[in-house]
Amino acid sequence: MIKTHKTKMYPNAAMRLALQNLFSYRRYCYNQALEVWNNMYDESVLMADKSLRPNERKVRNELVNNKQDWQFEQSARVLQLAVSDLAKGWQNYFNPQMPNHAQPRFKSKKHSKNSFKTDRAKTVAGKLRLDKPRGAKDWYDIRLAERPRWIGKLKLATIVEEADGYYVSLSIDVDETVDQKNGNLVTAVDANVARFDYKDANGYQSVSTISDKLLNLYGRITKYQRLLARKRVANPTNFRSNNYRSTRAKLKRDYQKVSRIQADILHKFTAQLVRDNDVIAIEDLDNLHMRMNKHLAKNLHRSMFGQFKQIMQYKCEWNGAKLVMADRLYPSTQRCCRCGYIKTGDEKVGLSGNRKHHTGHNEYVCYKCGAKMRRDENAVENLIQYAQVN
Ligand SMILES: [Zn+2]
Image 1 (cartoon, rainbow, N blue to C red):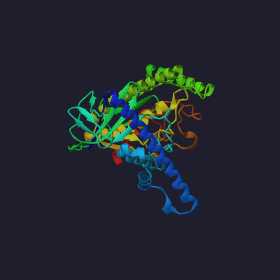
Image 2: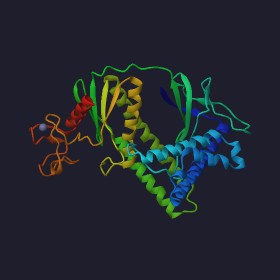
Image 3: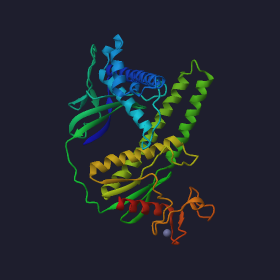
Image 4: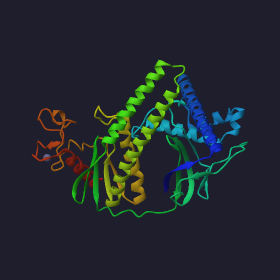
């Protein structure tokens, strides 16, 4: 079982330089790979020959065979993993089940995150040792804020630069088997824009996903993004002024705060779910299409639901709980949990209730058996029933 542990790291000046170099090299390889990929694809279309279609192996060989002299002093693993990430990106793009299926795009220095991966890293005495590239003179182990939380073989290290420094995610292959829980305790989570609804031993509960602080940060991020965009338009050749940089630094800090607050909410909630339950049903959310309140910073808040699914997937595995993903077409909102009646047409409950029958946004009234419930309790109950038969 692969477990990951993210921790801060403290590279010295020489290693910071090396990391920056690796970030640019990762970006270079990814962009090159994308270009080759696109060209191969165009060619296959022009020649109407499917055998010319690009794949990971072909693109990687093309890049390796056409390496420039300077590239031989760079990490070969960074190149290979960049191509492999691109291949995964395309796979996700064509897989409608993936929460964030955006088309792979060229990464610009301005907009993309600084990161790279390597599967040759080691942890030595609580420090991270990266594979030393050929010809590198100064090469040091990097101090980590915490010792790796898991014992096992280090499979992959993902290094990222965030607003306040460098972090590494260690993916460790842990040799342990988890007993599957017996499956008696079943719950379900109905994810809404502002909260998660679920059921525990004491009845229906909900956890808010929005706080004033989060809303405030969303607002600030939107403001900074607008400011930066305006500066880029106003002064396209020389927008990297001190003013621009400082606004960008503020933006990055707020991004980091948002992702920490969101992660905190998600981790606390999911930890409790997998601890108290054996089977958990959730909707297979397609968060790109999730309906949002127009006042929210849509993409920022939406990303929470993609993360929720991901975290649930691995935490259930780690704890021996079963995750049931309800089919996307399962009408958990429209179905009556008492009699199974499914609303269609103008009877459907929308975000703001039902116009024809004048019901409110959190009301479910069954027109067949007459049951009156809260809308999210009905949805939770439907998902629980789904988990029991699937
Ligand atoms: Zn009913």
